[in-house]
Length: 110
Length: 185
Image (cartoon, rainbow over all chains, first blue to last red; front, side, top):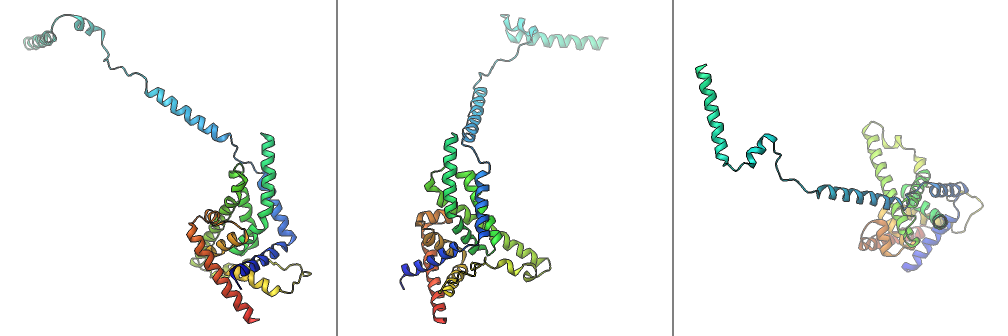
């Protein structure tokens, strides 16, 4: 017997067994099929909707990250006069030092 | 949109009606229990409908059989684990399992049908059932379901070379068993 003949014989027997399936099994298979077809399934718009949400998040993140970042330091009003004056910064540092010395001297005498 | 959905449903109904009995017999050969086989087929149908109903109809056979094979393997894996636990926790495997459950469905339930070559048919079914799972899958998908090598490989989640090997071994084993049966008669 060739391979083809053997295969035909076997598949013929399997077909016959399938034809002879009992009514109860056939009925349960048909019910299973109907249940599967009636079950809620993933709709095709779910993917575009999910994709849209992801895209919106990416755009929002990109806009957030691309906002211009201020590199200037906050300036207190009392410093404004000093910064706008034409005097050298060292002068103000020396004034601070002299004020500290004065306070120390006052504490020592007092 | 609704018309398209109805068309999908009608086409799927027709496809599933065409394969459900063979799918059931494949599952039954693999797991040996009618109720389990029915559950496996239903799960495969459900997943195909839920996940792949909008795919072209030509893709349904390999997808459906891939799901079916995967469910069968999962079932057998769970059964192995369950059996091991039963043995660990006292009872023997024989005590825990109902031997009647592992019998195949009564394919000759109708007594009116008594074919002359009944013995051969029974021997063929027994021989197919006795094949190792992968050989059984390769043989049934290729020879019975008519999938080509590439689709069988997709369904079995293996290479085309493996399909050819499993198929050749299955055929060899079936020939050996059935020739033996023939000589016994």
